[in-house]
Image (cartoon, rainbow, N blue to C red; front, side):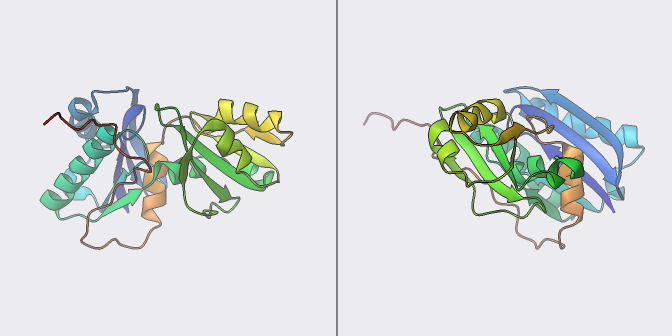
Length: 222
């Protein structure tokens, strides 16, 4: 199976072409904004580097959040447009599960739980717990640093994501056994592709965004 995967939901713009467990091409660029201009040229570049055309693809994969509203919309709009134009199935993968899947087998063997954390850039944290088999332990949530730390059950804990350092510090202040994982702060598109390849074939409906918090908007004066 050949999968084109991309991520624009948090602090990066990235794309990868993955075939049966091998990463054929990957680009990753840290950026807070500008993903709408960067994504399609990046997709063209990774396809060219992989020596493939869009007609060779079997599946698309895109991150659906949580993250920035603009970034999520950029990725989903591109995925939906490509899926429609190419008649390809498209799988949505949350950034939380992509980061959990980025942890190594050795890391997971030494932990009871994996806590994935993403800085919302609005004073709270997006988080979700997974077990060592990468099964979600409940729904994702958004909360402040202290509330997140206090919500975590006892056990050996690995923390990953771009809010991991702050969360580990808060957990250790509570006497908890927590350590930083090796995963990066943004989703790896190759991991997104691998996770998506293992999913059942999606239906015709496009992936749904995962926001976890309301948009920071102000109603106009009337």
